[in-house]
Length: 456
Image (cartoon, rainbow, N blue to C red; front, side, top):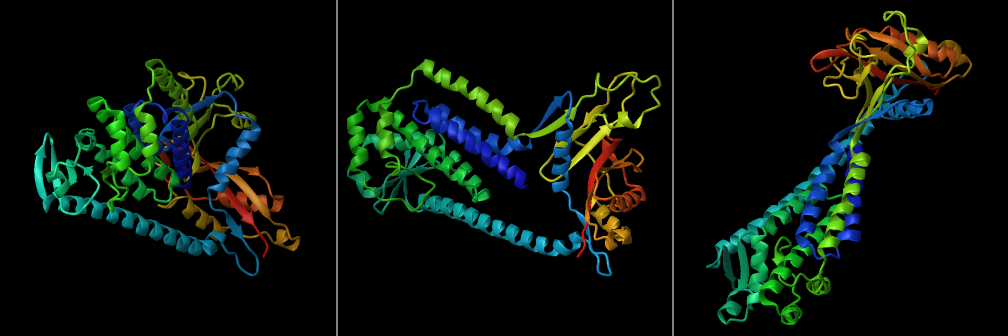
């Protein structure tokens, strides 16, 4: 989840920066509205999209990086001495679960408060519309309220002061402005961004988007007034003369959006040529492509075509060749694991790697954590290593094959021969797993597994 949030926030921040640099000062408000909303949807979804990246050769240094990333996302089995063997995962699990529970409860509580506030504000608008006089206006409804208030709109309602409306003190420009919000269905945008703020209240980027979306709504409504009335100075004077009172309901579109008056004045007289608009739109294409490459989930696969030596017999395979087999690594939000499937040499001269297995292998009905507990119950701290105060971390790699058997157990990072031998012996003695499956067929799955020996 942390990896997803980082990618989502970074992507949203990048697209917001592009908006600030290229689009904010342009008079192309409908496109800006689409861009802002699409940027939010894109940022939320792109970290979930998987992109395959094939490279002809993975260097040894890159393989070490993959192994390190994998190790960082899997719990170590730590062994201590003092008469008994203790699992570090058992020691830290309780405190970790407690912290995780507190974080989840805090997030749920704040999110609930945001959602309740949103529901309360919408309810106040609906109740105000029902409890006051209503006048039909085109496809909208004018709601005449008793208290002195700035004209504002939401949904299909335009809220006006009853006395001002009866005395003819509300200019046509204001009605056109608010009616434009209704025709453009700006309330849907507001509810959408408010829901995102409620779900991602900890993310400052969404607050920036909310402000820009509301600002752009005012630009669109101002443009409609200017097209209809053609008298920009008079309309600007209406904005200046309107009260600066702030509405207590944040969802509504207010005529004198108080954060925005200066920019609205500038935008009323600004124009963007068609050529410039086209150039700006085309400039966004490489930005989107870069965002896809950088912030999507990536599958990095090594092709072995023309790398493996030619074999006289397809059934014989040297250890040195095994080390050159293709690997497919997926760095997901929670796990990093390797999957590969054997393919007949009659159809291909290379092994086709898989980056995502539909059904992961299971150990005694559980997952890799269950296997960790099993290893901890079987492994013993070598006495010779204890006597010589030897400790360290052993990184092993093994394959759960199509039959569920643990094969090809290798040490990919050594600590000491004593420690290596003990870790290797226990992993090799593993009972059978339930094999992983891809497209309803069993496949080989390779795991990197760390064991830490530490003297207390």
